[in-house]
Amino acid sequence: MDEGRRQLAEVGLAHFSAREVAKRVGYSIGTLYNVFGSLDGLILAINARTLRLWTADFRRRLAEAQGDRIAALIRGYFEFAAQNPKTWIAIYEHHLGDGAAAPRWYQDLVADLLGIAAAEIAAVLPAADPQQTAALARSLVATVHGHCAFSLYKTFDLLGETAPAQAALARVGEAIAAARQKGGASAP
Image (cartoon, rainbow, N blue to C red):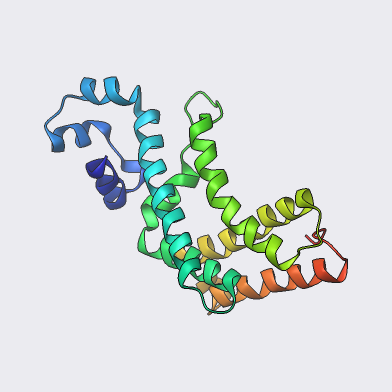
């Protein structure tokens, strides 16, 4: 796993090779596939490790947060992605070869990460309907993700945005303020 994540961090998903991982650890490719089932299984396991690290990072940031906890998460989103760009983007780039949904255990890891953001949004919108809060959380994570991806890919450089994390924080703040005005979490 460590070698697979190291290689993914070096070359990215497009150039990732299970054969190279096997070679580096002294295994045959067949041994890797016996353990992980397939290339997809190996990548899911590596991405799962990244998700666990990211979730732990979020929890640590919240434990240390003083003041605006949502701002701490947004800064954490950007910082984790900047520190782990190729393994972070592999979470979003990898899709199972047969088009199937990710296994339940993997979906649970993603839900755990998203749940951290949803809990913080629910804390600032205590009167909101839980389903609306969850929907708002998904939209706000997508907003932050878009800003973060544009930042990493240098797209914002072309658009003249010089402070993408602050822009993401502003958009999230505006959405939460709009949800408060409406008395719930129905803001986009």
